[in-house]
Length: 249
Figure: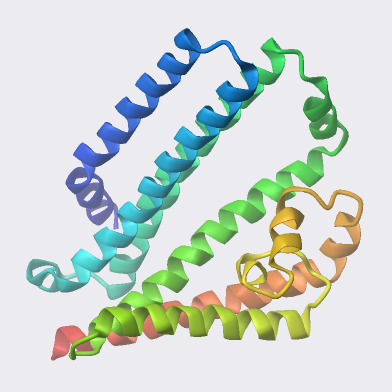
């Protein structure tokens, strides 16, 4: 597992290093050349967003490449490790980016004496932790779902398999979001809830919804998490079977 993870990092090292260098240069330029606070916030968030998108796409491309690479089929490793390795790489990269962003945000709030957000964090520490953990789970769950669609598309040996994978992805997330909404309609949490009809309130519920958190934790939130956990395990099982069948073929 660690060898696969090391190999995936090494293969994408140039891209990851490039993202880090560009992000540092962009932040230094913003800090030295701009004076408008609003503009600084907007461009800073934009640079972090672009870096996040690149770091999110990188493990997806890595997984797709690994499925098609002949030399990866010859490695005597369990198929589950082939799936977990790029997920771990992507999560680690996004986690580091998120930590840098949080530190940067804290420094900004301290320097510019923006006490309102700091007051909310200090007043609701548990809520903040739950929101951050739910964001981490959403990232992992999204990787697993996208990997499932890629695995299904790769296992289909016909033209248009790429578009089939896209269709499969939207069928999965919309179907499970409907089922999640049916079972836990009041829980504004989780990956599938983003694709439910109340998508805007679901996204806001990850970041806010402070007052109703206690109710959510005791009811729909736990149920929604268990539902998504079961789905993720089932997705991993299906992917392992499809990869094993492809290797045997």
